[in-house]
Image 1 (cartoon, rainbow, N blue to C red):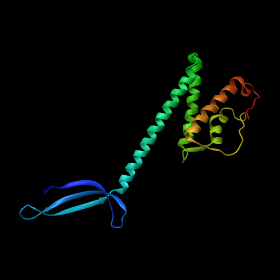
Image 2 (cartoon, rainbow, N blue to C red):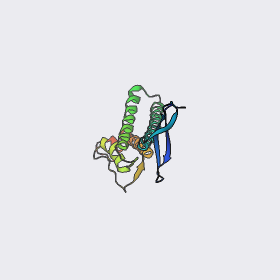
Image 3 (cartoon, rainbow, N blue to C red):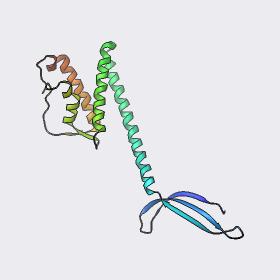
Image 4 (cartoon, rainbow, N blue to C red):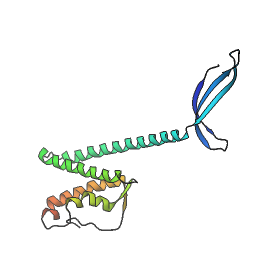
Length: 176
């Protein structure tokens, strides 16, 4: 039609390597204004397309993790408020559970992989709140992000019970 056009598409190189291209096609007109030939300029945008794909994956993973965290916060709120305790009792318990969740999330955010060690979780969520009174030992165990969150919250609950009713309710008590 004698008009310039632009499109993106995928095609293999002469060596057979798949690439994404940004292609501009412009007509070259003769003296009478008719299309004599075309000029096609193709720019390799493979790196851009790969980055866009990576960003979409990261965006989807972030959305998934945020939804999981919101669900977890809802569960924590339901667990904390289910006994009709007064706000003076429920509020500190809820905030302590959120702080534990935040600590576990920080551990996972600073890891290069979506895994961490059980010892790291224990040290970050329990031992720091009762230094020298919680002693953890055992083999090295790696846990997934999902398990790390659940373990951190479980350990927090166990520590809370130990402070209220168990070994940590006295000055000399120790949990091993």
